[in-house]
Image (tube, rainbow, N blue to C red; front, side, top):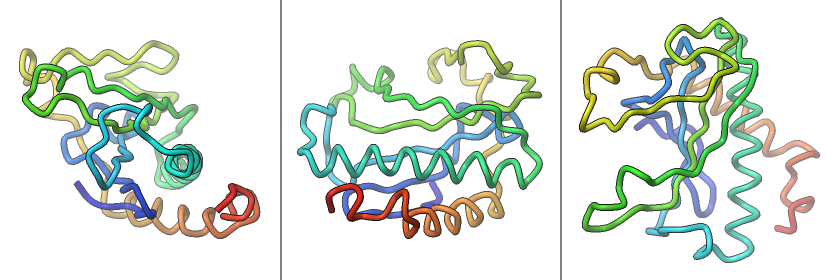
Length: 159
């Protein structure tokens, strides 16, 4: 995964093996730097930091993907963990940001996302393209800009 942005407790990353193709809107994740299995384990500062990051990342992703030719109509934010419930370490907290392109062909706009299990249907995921280096760099720069702006200023969020 390519790291897009780093905060005190979280990493924003481009999915190397995305669940949504770049041209359908793209896929990034927000992962804690330490092992946290559920949101109930977050302390208040981490929860606020995570919410702030989802907003900054979503706003940056929408803007940059549009600039790079992918007409994002919406971002879906999801906290999953279903595929790891039976793994020895169990699920870990992470957020997915799925761009929803208005002209998507694999995951049509306006319909629910559909993710059959990777282990059962690996062929469905083999051709999905990750974000490009230009996408990642643009989102990173936009996130840095947004994080320093008035709306997302640390003082506004109690930091």
